[in-house]
Length: 143
Image 1 (tube, rainbow, N blue to C red):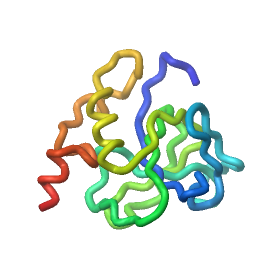
Image 2 (spheres, rainbow, N blue to C red):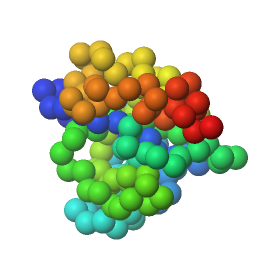
Image 3 (cartoon, one colour):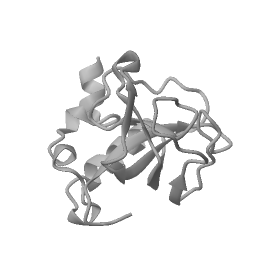
Image 4 (cartoon, rainbow, N blue to C red):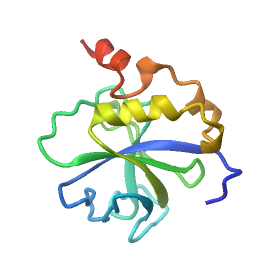
């Protein structure tokens, strides 16, 4: 990935075997690339995640697996649809930034959002704490 580009973050759910919905195996850290990527809205060909700051109805009611924060270039994003207002996108590759539960993912993104070394897009940098999944402000907003 070219570090001069802008990046966005996605939240991806993986199972206990570190695989996503379609079987892409996620390492504990480093680079993740889809087994197969096609530029269409078929979830079976690519990595799939929820765009940070754009989810409305996400809760951590899963009793299995983990959540992964994946950093990817803001080009080559394919919007799948607004499944339950979650803004699901497909993308070909990314860098694993954090693995944990929703709360730890929210804390990670809020803590690292303004670091210039991450090259986040302008849109990502202006997110407020209450818009970031898992942060205390976001959790209060849900109640």
